[in-house]
Image 1: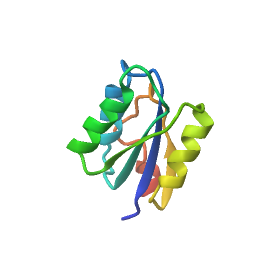
Image 2: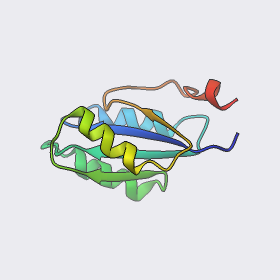
Image 3: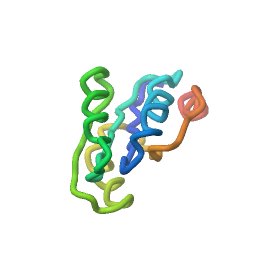
Image 4: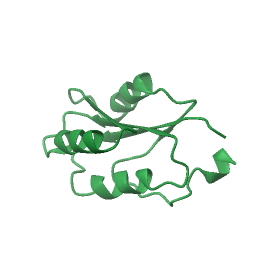
Amino acid sequence: MNDLISVVIPTYNRRDKLPACIASVLAQTYDRLDVILVDDGSPDGCGRLAEDYARRDARVRAIHRENGGLSAARNTGTLAAKGDYITYVDGDDFLHPSAWKACTG
């Protein structure tokens, strides 16, 4: 399978947990990923962290928006998604390295 999976990660006040979350997504055994970090107006530096990841990894994009809540942030990420499939991960989640293996064969 060569499909692209868009991973939408809304971020708000998750600065302490976000690096581990992003690392677990980027370490997937399936690496055709479009990772969209949606900074929902977080006051704790999530936006700067998202920009840092976007500069270091071409699979990552950072989007910034005024705070509108989790659903609005997910909707923003969904509209920006380029993948054949879209999935959602919360900023304090940690994924098993082969989380999408069953989906990708």
